[in-house]
Length: 256
Image (tube, rainbow, N blue to C red; front, top):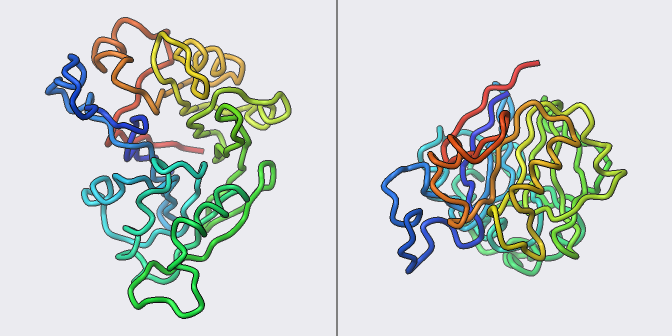
């Protein structure tokens, strides 16, 4: 299974418009962060986790082939705002989108023209499915376990794919949901910055503590903002062994 990080930034992206900090002015490509999303692929199945407003930019460098399913973590615009741009992929057939009840309702409101009885020609062909934490599903040859985490007061979904898990926008997680992550070896989890606590996002220290509780051997931090610092310096000097900042375009090859 191959994981491609399409985006690793927060809702504002990096660089932040109008910001003159050293991260936003950096020429290092690893300091350029679009909104969070990943591709999960095997030889026969291709899944997208979230489809934010940078989707078109993110997907253009990738091979053009069928998307077998889109898994939505939650209903915020930076995670769903690119849904209209899936239109070219509908030439392969209807695209199945999976979301919890809150995100499903939001999608019906955000894209009403996709779900009307008499749809305008050319709108995305979406099959919208409601899913729930703890209830496994299989798409193609990929088994998926949704896990509920709390984004402040908003319940959202993370996803486990065998020994790999992807969680973004988490602030807290209930013990019963954390147990669903037992045995995960590679963890991707959000870490906004090092300092200044946020009401709905983890700091780096929170993410590291969570990764240790889960027992992940390798942890990659995503949904990071410009305040986290320069990618090269943070990875070299500020993170413990086994923990690193992910970056846009990064690929992971997972076996077994």
